Amino acid sequence: MPSRRSFLDQLFRIGASIPLAAQLSFAQASAKSAPRSGPFSDADDQFLNDMEKANFLYFWEQANPKTGLVKDRCNVRQADNGVVGSIAATGFGLTALCIGANRGFAPSPQIQERVLNTLQFLWKKTPNHRGFFYHWIDINSGERVWDAEVSSVDTAILLCGVLTAREYFRNSEIRKLASAIFDRVEWTWLSEDTPLLPHGWSPEIGFLPYRWDYYSELMMMYLLGMGSASHPLKSDTWMAWKRQKFEYHGLRYIGSFAPLFVHQYSQAWFDFRKKRDKFTDYFENSVIATEVHRRFCLELAKEFPSYSEDLWGITASDSPSGYVVWGGPPAVGPIDGSIVPSAAGGSLPFLPDPVMRVLRTLHTRYPQSWSRYGFVNAMNPLTHWFDSDVIGIDTGITMLMAENARSNFVWKTFMQSAEARRGMERAGFEPY
Image (cartoon, rainbow, N blue to C red):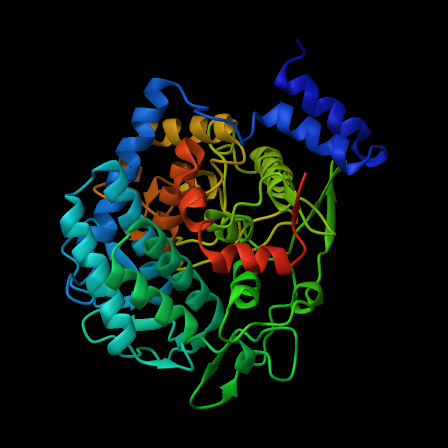
């Protein structure tokens, strides 16, 4: 049988002249990508279980147990008394609690109580505007911090967690609160004058001038809006945003001038496997985009010898100079040889074997990249810099995608919701 390398070499030579379906077939064969059942050895599965358990601890310990609101980030090198949370981290946290209950990472009654506290606080006390929540919040009071905007996409991430909890915990109060929180969101207000949703709104200036107009993590937001029973978006909003095509070494895919996480976030919850709308199969599109990113990192090894088959992956993250939005191709941001564990970790369902190689390398060769909560946010093997923080959304995407790659649990649970199924139907998705 041809090796994985020969499949890729064939693909790169003839990719520009073959149809997309053939590209997808080659990409699947080369990367050994999901969907499949149990793609990991017993040892790798145990490693991922240990990683997920550490990730779970972040959402269990770095949240206010009475409000359920989760810290945006946490310093793992010293005591951290910060109170700034994020509504997106809370959405990842609700999903992490479901995984934790299913895996037995903590007693299920205690986890269920935490979920109930979270939903009660979101429904009754956390400030919102027409159902949308502020991006940055105080984990103790829920109040807005840093003059944060009411965020459309961060609210969408929260809602994905809310629906996942509703479908997993068959508790009548949880189900009632989760449905009420979702149905309160006025998607029609967000789209009053345009099918392209704004990034957010603030009391000081009104709607932000930026629109969700290019392929990115926006898919979850549009699908949730179309799936709403109380304030549904029109179906034509799905057609409004642009799907820009990229090509790299003969591999063609829909993407953005943006970090790798844009291919991950919506797919943490929405199961796009073996489905397509009139444009593409988004799961296979992300398989190709992730393989392209891996190749891009390998080419950067000429400048930064840290990048190799063992270490690759760049996405928005901390750096020695602060938070940086970087990635590629084409190169975005001042790339310096850093490795971002969530870039690979959040891609586990797309490229299981190459990603496991990275995670194993990080854990084995660079023990300073590991913490109580799993991998730190970023590290640079060239300069021996290791981040002091973990960030909730990056820890979250790693945990959720690891679980999906292992068991499909988040996909199976979230896709039971009528809102998710209705949104995909209205967007024109069909199985094949």
